[in-house]
Length: 131
Image 1 (spheres, rainbow, N blue to C red):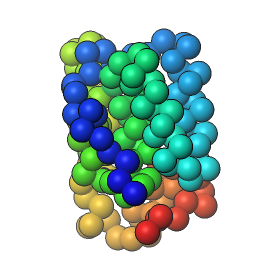
Image 2: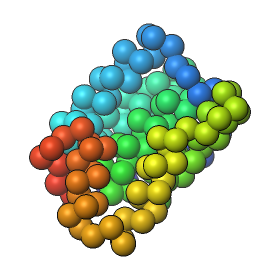
Image 3: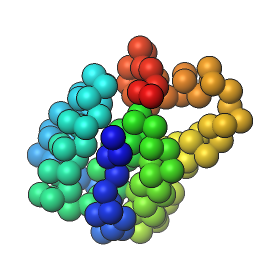
């Protein structure tokens, strides 16, 4: 199932999130780590509707999409998150740039190296490609 929605194409107007939003975001992160990508995305959609787009939210969403093998959509969200960081903090988010590089080069990394990277994104040492 494709999790990406057109509403994610909106550029975030902020990078950071509030403490209260972070508490909700962590629930999505927990679901992602359990391999429940659709449920995690519902949490992220709630945050998007409730608090608006932010770089931090888009990073979480990008990792979830990557775990669901939606690599190009994940790269797109990492790019938007990086731009939000540039706009708000006047510096690039090196973490976003790293993930963009890894996902862009996934074909040339070799399956084992890419799987190791995906386990780190998933926060799950037992991560397996969903299909």
